[in-house]
Image: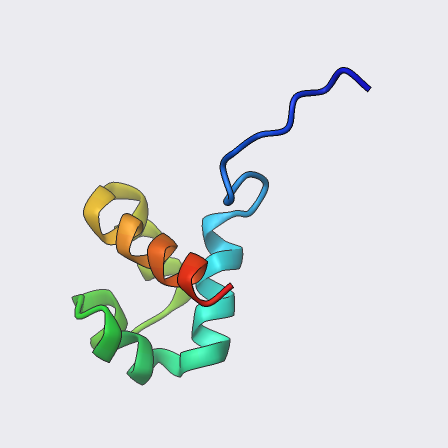
Length: 71
């Protein structure tokens, strides 16, 4: 057992899994109120949100922070 433990709390959790859990917990409306970005407020979908979050580091950081806060 020489494996090192990672200190990253998001290690092994995909962005899609994070987003799905947040949508399940808050719904698109609630998520859009907490994090005011267009992909959550106008015709939201997992696919479009993932595309935006992967290209936009500040938005991804906010989503990850919200996930960790509610974990």
